[in-house]
Amino acid sequence: MAIRQKSVVKVKMSGFASSHSHCVVHTRDLSLTIDEPVERGGTNLGFSPTETAYAALVGCTNTIGHKCAAKLGVDIGNLEFEMEIDFDRRGVLLQEEIEVPFKAIRLDVTASGAASIEELAQVAAETEKYCAVSKMYKNAGTDVEVSWTKK
Image (cartoon, rainbow, N blue to C red; front, side, top):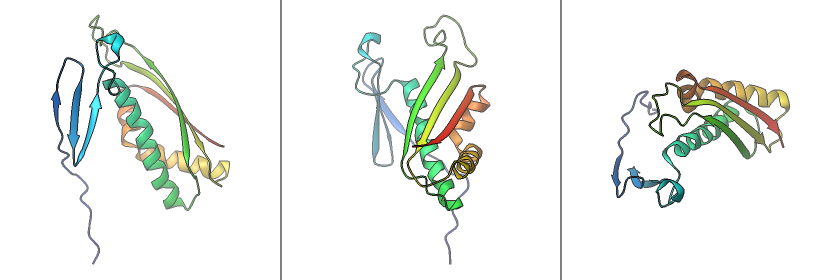
């Protein structure tokens, strides 16, 4: 008898902030350090909060991309990522409230596997349908462009 996975789960996290910029967040048996660079008063021990959000898009694209490739029977090999973000910092600088602070994200994904350009396009289309972080950005009004190419 197969075990049916839950479709909605509760995720629990906890954290502790030791300064205005440095905090450690825990989930499961893991910890994530979030901090600001020295020039913004931090200790540079981790990604900034916004950098952490951007990194989540890379991680989700990688995980969902590989799941979709496996489902399609496509060899994408290892993936490399280059990302550029247009970030309107007026909100974090407390100058004014900004509804869509992440104006645009351009993510280039390069696959090392044997997949053809057509197969990569299939994987990209499926990944776009299922990547939760990409959907979050798009639904918030961010222009997200993800391009997949072969190495």
